[in-house]
Length: 215
Image 1: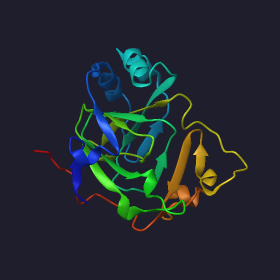
Image 2 (image 1 turned 135 degrees about the vertical axis):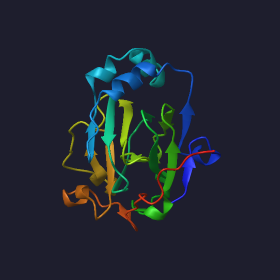
Image 3 (image 1 turned 90 degrees about the vertical axis):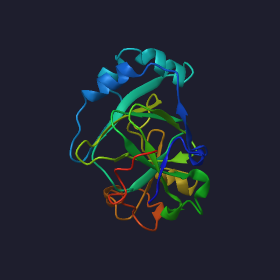
Image 4 (image 1 turned 30 degrees about the vertical axis):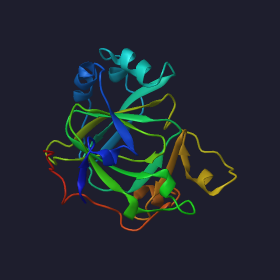
């Protein structure tokens, strides 16, 4: 896949680069979090919540609403799933990373063809907003030796346990956790665990495309 830098106008329908906030404290705290061979996700991390300037940044990003600062770290090059939330997600990495994204509006009959997915390159230290209308999932590393450590800032309570028993439409079946609608590829572990199979097409792998450097 072609890796598109988030500074490219093609990123505009999916999110934006966020500037002007002091993120050094968050990056320092993020450096102390684990980076496994697979992936690990922590919805709310005390070290990040208490990092220097974290309160100032969190309150500004979410307009004074309750928020959580967590992380998704590790090594990954595959799509596997896509998800969305009712609210923006903000990401910031200690290393370059890649986001595989699609638009919620690209769903047809509550299923997304993975041909709609694009890969966006996020340089280390650059804070990005991923809009609520953007489908996303775990980041991908750009350097297999370094992996990725990525801040995941969301409305408080997102991705915590919540699985209702009833629903009125197809996408209700995709509600995998609180404020987390998950579309799984049939080949993914999530699908094997019972997640809604809302992706069709190739389970994309960008292993051959990483180590991109923007001009």
